[in-house]
Image (tube, rainbow, N blue to C red; front, top):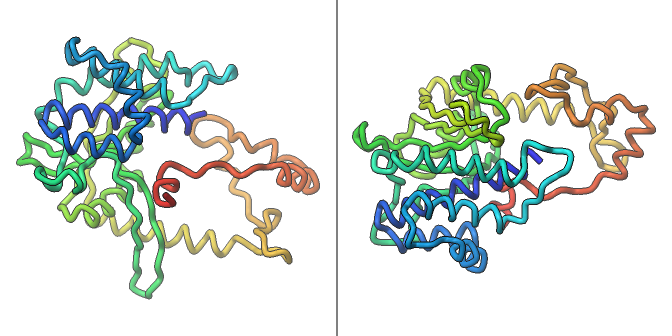
Length: 307
């Protein structure tokens, strides 16, 4: 549910950026091309039917956000009272109110203002290969939520990252000083956009707002070449370790019983791992559970690269 809700909210964030591109930056052709790329013609038409252009800007953008939610196919789960459509609507209102007064200071990067087929800084998928000194190649994929310009800092290019969370406490905030995800995205964005990117704006949004002034938090972090070097070492170490500890059984499948257990991960992300019942079962029980598992759809980045 966390992944599904996060993906749906990221569609809302993209739609708000598209509105900014069309009505604030006056680039309707770029906005339309971006909308069709992300949502497709049929769904974008359905989304726009919920927008009344006679209303003020705030109401229009909220209607746009609600249109995205209502056409997403997302359904509430009775066992999850946090990631509900009504809570996501409230979170969307918080996000819209936060963004409205920032648009002039944070324009969306556009590769070519005359050519709408060129890249714009909204939902850009990257698919890159890291090459190490010994010739080792590692494929690295992801999606840049946004690329914006800091008008108050000589239009400094800045990644615009959206995060949804159940809490925005100090532990969450301080994690972005080090997290490899931001570092890796900055490194790859430098390559795919050919820009000197070192900064990222992080916007955290609570899926279930409490309306106590703690539902949204915005911060800016930066990365150095040293940070990127440490990230690259981590990628290499992780890949090497994964291959070292992925024994193959006689049928050519990963031997899950031979893998080492790192039990400190059982309670990461502030809650117990959902696979604890699987791991605490017997070897025969795990085999039975494994046979009942079904393949799931890939992440948004994986699907975009595949498509």
